[in-house]
Image 1: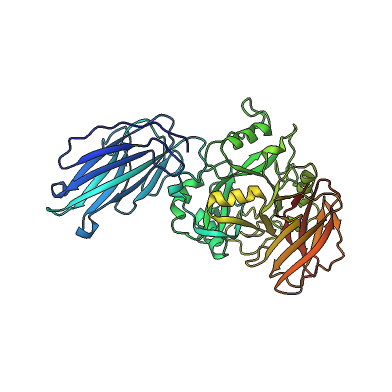
Image 2: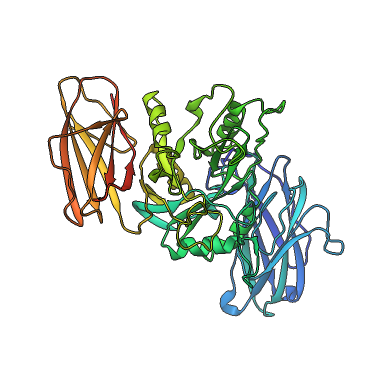
Length: 509
């Protein structure tokens, strides 16, 4: 969050209400921009009080955290928000939560339920306090902390709104590509007699029932689903909902994660001449961008689905490739793995991820030629915690493998060591010529499968046996370094040859 100047306020001559505004000299990511303090007493019972604060130009979100004392004496303070249009027939009332919420946000595109999203006008705003009960001899003090958001802020700010759902490092399982009513996702109607745009809650409920830890809601060229996320996230407190969009153009699709800010996708227009213009916008928004299903047709059967930019693309601005879309890893025609590996061979460190591309939350199993079930495949991320920022940071870092068949329990890790140093998937390792790199893999719930090693896109056959014979097993082999640049990764295949795991590479030298 950028630094903000001190905002002055004056004492209000309200009966039994004093008000002091504390400016913030050094705003940080976690500190509020404005802090309001006030007091109430018994004579304020059954009254309303406006507590003003000024919003500067350039703000597109207001987040309020409200606390007060006196609850042990049954003091109750209800809470609302007024914008500068004033309270004229509720014209300026942006929402009223009563006493049900002590933390809420109002943004240009989304808001906490009971508040209305919309433009954030600069000027004098008011917290509206309703006092349904305060006993005659009682006194109460309140504090309101207020954060201002600005265009370009990532969706995980302010931090007060985005506490981790689970603390501590671990492997977190998710689906990074799906569609609902906010684009072209549909499902059978309640009667079963037709089809309709599928409400977002069905997607979230299905993901929760499948035991996923996170999902990215990636409708086409829109983030209107962000308002629904505000309603659903508090209830689904074990499932992280990441706002995303599928940037859908005539020459390819890409997912942009972690921002709800506007992005112009109209390639060929004066403002957006090519994909590089889109990538520059995405970088300014601090989002993570992946190229989706790159080896798809780009014709009347799937217009714009394949990656076919007319001009060279600066791949340094791309962070990930959707190497597995739905069940395409089983298809030599549509699998995105060769495209991804081609980028690795061009020395771009791009993370392989997967996404179901689900368009029907009611689908329980993959449908031939139709929608793939949510969580098939599953992207498994080793992150410092279950939060939006931590998940996206871990994807950027390449600490990821793809569970192609979307199991609930398969785990796979790989660490390469040389010269007293180690590197995991996505990390880099130095290994001079004539040295040996020790590669260690740990597999869980992959018994009767076997690991396959890929170096620079070609199969490498170590002399060690890489068959997995137990529910939990460690495998190791040595790889001879020639001191040059390489990337090394591992896949896991079942006894029938089916691809089970796609691992990300360790980058050597």
